[in-house]
Length: 312
Image 1 (cartoon, rainbow, N blue to C red):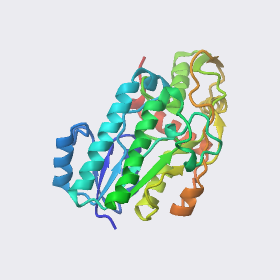
Image 2 (cartoon, rainbow, N blue to C red; image 1 turned 180 degrees about the vertical axis):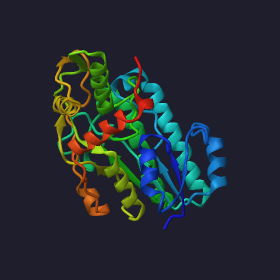
Image 3 (cartoon, one colour; image 1 turned 60 degrees about the horizontal axis):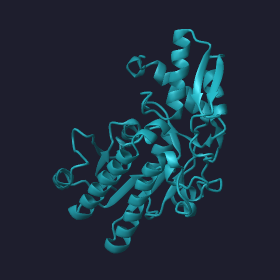
């Protein structure tokens, strides 16, 4: 049993939820950039040597939706590679870290991957162009952890969740992913008395939407298992189009306005839905939360947290 866990990104979306999930079983050090600048190798080395965790969960990432990925491909790739390299090497050198758990991204898969995605296909093609730098950075770090396991015996787990959503998500329109972005658009339209909202793409792209509690449970299972460093998908196996998602959110928020789809804007990867066979076999994991129940909880959380309502 691990006693002390250092969790990067511990005050972010996934980190906040994961701390709640693990806090009764582990001592959690929830890190953020103020506690340790992961871009600074010396600072990371010194920090890990000082706190001496026996497990690291790496959640911190420079990431965002399609627009943010397109605007900052160099920063997204550099930041994620640098943070990961610094932290993985510090963990290897410290001599105290027994397990390194890294959160990957579904963006790592090739643009045209057979559905449902299987881990064996991760390197069989180039990722969707708008988020390729982020995806390549993450799976490069996975390969580093696999190599360190072979050469140094460093134990690691690489989890690849699908599109996550839930309470504490990012509702900033400049960086948010699809579900909080749509919730915010609908909320703003209702508040302003508008009878239509504009959305990117044609709405035909599909995603496998994962409620954050299900992802946290997968991490908890990974802490107690020894599945090895090869990638493990974490998803629901349910494929939903962005159009259907938007209509569902509108129904739950009681918005009956018109949906205007701007097909000149990118849709991102055409289809996303994963096989979770390896997760079930190696971790005993299966998703439990339906998309509707997850959306209802997320919307309720958003509406009950005034500080998360972004003024325009």
